[in-house]
Image (cartoon, rainbow, N blue to C red; front, side, top):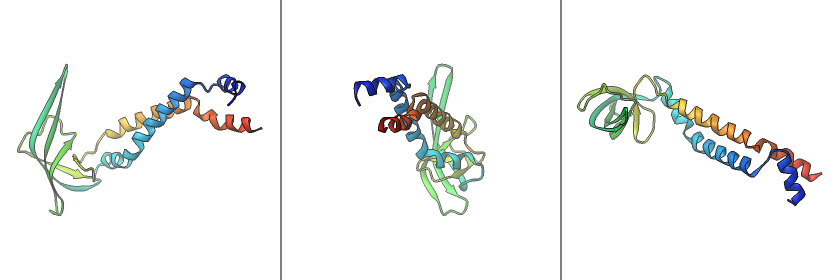
Length: 153
């Protein structure tokens, strides 16, 4: 691209900062999309293999004004065909203690099972996907094909 071409591109709104924004947006989209199917399966109540989770270990991390706990244990499907010796229960909250059991669903995620009510992970994924899309549009990447066409003339 010549100096005149670079000046014309900047005049039409495609700057180095815009391209950087668009690249970051594409990175967000790239990171979120591969996980979309799993997150959607987790969000739908009743999806996956039903079974029982037995809590074996509870670890908590305290932050100012907040405590986040993770329950790890075993999962056994209702028909006994699936036994997973070490999994975490997503969305366990404060109600379940070590040694207790809870109904859960295995949706195929390697280290996690879910409560039957579903998961809200999709909200964060949708937010990240939206931010990524806005960064791509705001960064001016949507103008690049038009600029390439006008350069060829």
